[in-house]
Length: 167
Length: 246
Image 1 (cartoon, rainbow over the protein chains, first blue to last red):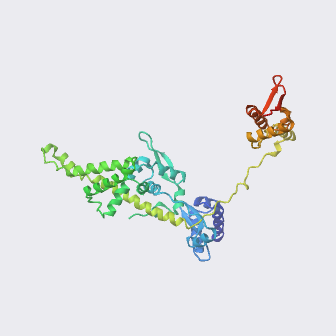
Image 2: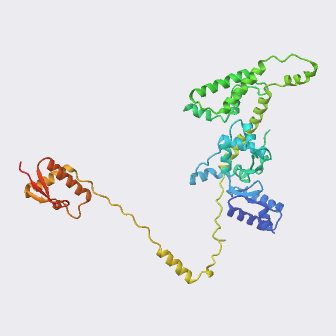
Image 3: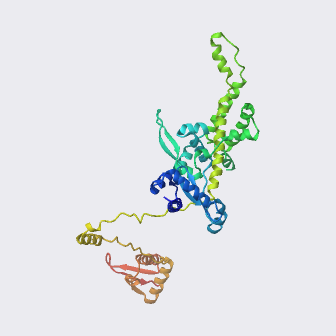
């Protein structure tokens, strides 16, 4: 398929979805390879990078999403007065950081690192669908193993966990 | 209350230890355990003065610190027999602070990650996503209308119509009861004029039950005050009221 046409279709799909869409699903619909889709994304990025566009395309995990550019936030804020999004608590953020780099991990392992009960933080993260129960560890008590979701990458706007680098 | 907020700023014993380490610019690889323990306990004491149900994790850490401190105070064991020398050496070489140090370093790593995540989270607040388009109507399942006959419709209609409507509840709003004193005056004046009257003439069909009761009470009151006389020939019979000359 022509590159230009595919770019338009991808734009349309992402606009309709709102939520991130899997790259392989798009490739399937367009009868293209994932690499070809990513080439389209690259071209779209060049297009959107122009000042005449207020939207941008970004990769989160193995999905694509269409959002507004951060630069236009002051104007959006003025006209729509959006509510400030609620942030995760310090405890939830700490817990999530541990799960991100140690997944899959049990609650007791998290608690031994944090030195404090993490039940509430885990519940918040589960509720927000930032983590999920990946399975159970094969030890007495069969504790639940937690891992991060794709939504988690979307939440922080990360292409992958490696984006968070620690020296 | 203020202290309650204060403790909430520390996410646990490591967080508090960390705060103390940073405040005092302590080298994490060479922790002056006595100083740190003292400061930590000071803090715990301040909290427990006002808040008894302090998270047990804070107390466990206090105990750990004290244990490390006392271990460091003990003189290292003198070398014993050759047989156990190896085991003793191993025991003595381990700095009692090392476990704490490792835990603190690991905690520090994740604390730093969580700060990075917070930054990313805040960045995301400046961009907006559209809510997904509602496409449910476009691909709604077809309703198999052809299988429904006119007879089915008629039956359905009948069954709906035959269902009794729930009875409407009408509650009465009664007028404020007439004060007894006013009723007493009313009856007294009426009797003064007419000198004789049937009790039943003091109310009509529209009078509320409450008012009739008030009327009856007023009559009793007047009888007690010896202003009127009341006669009744038989049970449930008419009550005749007469004015009583003073």
